[in-house]
Amino acid sequence: MKSGGGNTNTKLILVHPYIQKQTSTNRLWLLAFISFFTISFLLTLLYTTDTIISTKTTSTVASSSPISQLPTTTINALLHYASRSNDSYHMSHGEMKSISDVLRRCPPPCNLLVFGLTHETLLWKSLNHNGRTVYIEENRYYAAYFEEIHPEIEVFDVQYTTKAREARELVSAVKDAVENECRPVQNLLFSDCKLGLNDLPNHVYDLDWDVILVDGPRGDGGDVPGRMASIFTAAVLARSKKAGGSHKTHVFVHDYYREIERLCGDEFLCRENLVESNDMLAHYVLERMDKNSTRFCRGRKKRSVSSSS
Image (cartoon, rainbow, N blue to C red):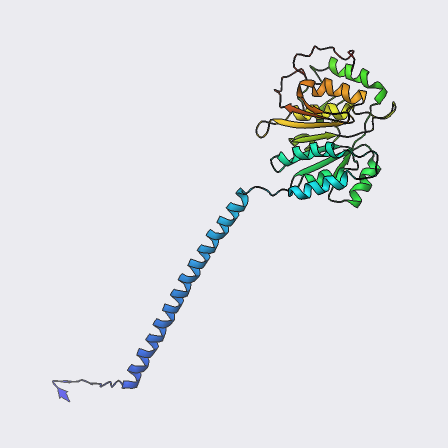
């Protein structure tokens, strides 16, 4: 076709119906894929959120629930068989039950410090279920041996420098220095007191002890260490607890019928704190003291060591 002075080319494009059908099908597939992906993403998001919430809820419930303790039947069985030993140095059933009752009432996790490895060592560890139990032993070789055969036991050896025959002299010296290096509230790690144990691991002084049992070192002769230092150390640890938590510490002294145990118990743990006693076991409950305190016992005169035990 010609018009005016120029040429115009006209093109005709024909679209086959098959091509239109194919394009429509591809769009449907694309839409289906996007829809599937979207639904899958939403379901995954909902499931993940629900799982996280469920996990947090379970964790919160678990952390808020009390720590399980040994069943009463298990405790009674342990006490029964421990008291049936042929070892003449073991505690009686009544003595072990007194300590067991306190451990059972102790809010978990309970911190138990024991002076001496004895027939009942494994018993205390078992009764203080889910708590921390630490032992202090005078014989380094026996401590290493015991820890080797019972790796679950935490035991430290300590070198005592005292002699049982010097008990009254040492207690008198402590009474003279009660306002200085032998204060009832102090960090024994830096103490120069003659009866203060200052070579134990740092965490022994940092922990707040809920229960302390003095059943060592040896005290049945003049040249053995005697329990002056362990009783004095127990008295200071109990009174030096940090603020917060329980202000009370239960202190047990075994072999209370002996002169040194009774003397040091009266001077450092104090009779007004004695809640139970028999010929072998004394039970004291000590309160945390102010850091400026200079007397172990209320109303006690400074010099009273010379009085009869």
